[in-house]
Length: 85
Picture 1: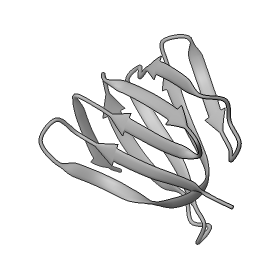
Picture 2: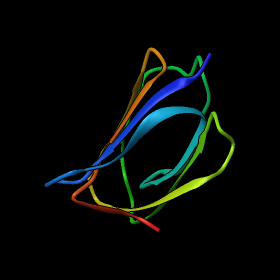
Picture 3: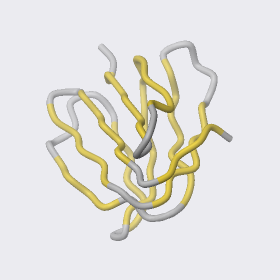
Picture 4: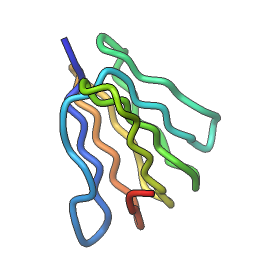
């Protein structure tokens, strides 16, 4: 079982795919997401979103502003600005 993850900026898609884990910095602190996570909606603070795809190699995305939502093993990160680092 895996997470279906999508990261988008205001003007483009940055990354999407299946992942084992997502770690993001929110205004309330860092949040780690695994399969079966409770539904959540959080405001993304500036910083890296670390995605561990099912292939195993970590993807780092610099995200600034926006929000993160989790429901039914689907994770959406919608940022004002985002890019792969």
